[in-house]
Image (cartoon, rainbow, N blue to C red; front, side, top):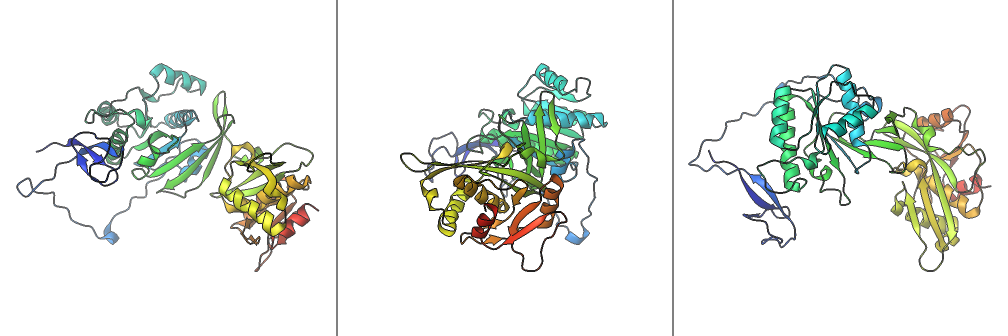
Length: 452
């Protein structure tokens, strides 16, 4: 039988070449040829193809396998209640954010529960992994550790050990001898990941792959591998901040966009079961430019303080800078304040907006909080302590209702807030005992009431 051979395949048009070329001869794309293993096509004179029989969907058996809890509550929350045997989970994030620390903690918790865990360290030696384990309090753990980068050796170790969980840290340093390209190239990453995924499905072992996110977002792994895996997790956070956020953007076995919060300490990652109070300031007196909103991350309401600063612009165009807030969304909200509220002096102001703690505020429900923070800073007039705002702001200035408002209000009441600005509800009001809910239809009305 003919063996697979290596060819260079254009990622744009699919053209093949025997050697690498800087420019594709068919479509003209530059740097588009990637080394890949290509299986030869069997013609009519070759061996007959394998006969496969389709199955009736109604007759396909389903085995409801119980999830395996990792022992790290916030990690299980993002996975949807625990990991599924045979699933492949990709953990992406910038270098140094704490992915190895997180997964080594998960490995330690699984090993303590009696699971056989294989931790493949491709970037660190056994001694370095041991030092990290000692810092995490896992020096006596029964984790099986392998420091190797050769795919064939890793596959053989998995077949021999038969672990319930395999962690590969990280996928971009693993290489196979079947390809001649350097580790970390698209061809190597894709080939190694495909072999590991196929082995995990056959052996019913849960597989964790670690991938670094580069500036382009695809070369080191995650964007190339997302279609191969069952779950994609992103570990985020500011390097200068101790808080880390774990998000799910793809999950074939559970809900997406759940959120797990951790705190990086000298002894490793600590779970934060109640993150709302972490992203609020400790001020006792109200300050201009600050407003609190409630963002719903999956099924978890999260209170976040928005801080804004306006300053007269010098020479040139006014600057707009954000941290944790979409800069394009900020531009739209500034236009609404200028045209619909009458704050035309914003056109000559530098505007800086950030979310406290570096957490990303992604959903439109934070629009009203951002608008009030900017108006408060411009007018040098603080809102009352205990105020918060929840609502999406349209381009005409209207305030639109958001989903799960009652759940957000209850979380705000629990933390200690007593007044909330929301969109007017046609059908019914959202009353929470001990909290004043002020409904408004236009952002102009909210600015006037909050900064009166």
